[in-house]
Length: 264
Image 1 (cartoon, one colour):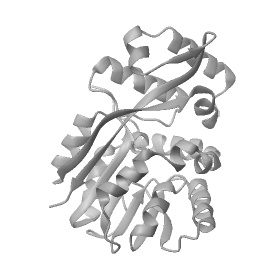
Image 2: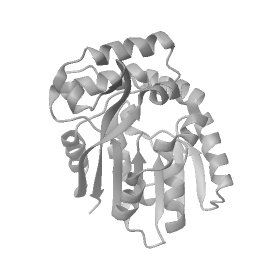
Image 3: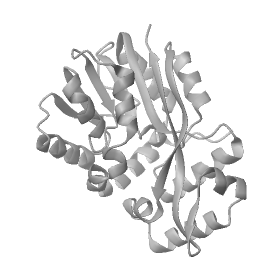
Image 4: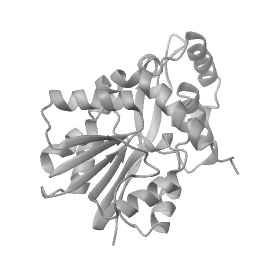
């Protein structure tokens, strides 16, 4: 069994990585857009009266996608610099019903039943204790409330799981783990949530140069990662869609999924 990561070290790493890269995440096309944002709204089917909590908001893209369709959005993040960028982004977009709090996903500073929707997009793979995050999300949800999770998720196959998590961690040291769909399901059910929707594992293509530059990978590390990918087992490179040009890596895919669960 893998050793549980030290929570304080993980959170320090997240603040360091994302504090330095905050603006890049506001302008990142893969975070600012994507079919998954529309899918989250489709699953939520908001009526206009909902109170939404956007966990680990990053550049604020999910909060801003929900804002026109709900009563209010509270967007939280662990990294002060990221919150500053997201707050400025929301001001430019004129979204008065979005507020921002510095908060930890694993110890939410809100009363029970404070929100009708809790959403986390492209972030929980950075959490030291994902079970605590699920427990806290269930706690702050109102009766009948909806939990939406959209994140990197590893294949159920152990070799592919290990391969994906290795290249993700190599590129971004604050990456803790992309968990399997089966693990997230089990944690949700264990915390009294009922699975009401699930999108199967899907691939998302990363342009290698932009993907590694966003995390400010040193040139030597980027070349080492590229060499490792080029030498990887065929079943891994095929599954993750490794693309080459003149013997250099141009892109690779990660896998993502969405789960919706309701609080009875």
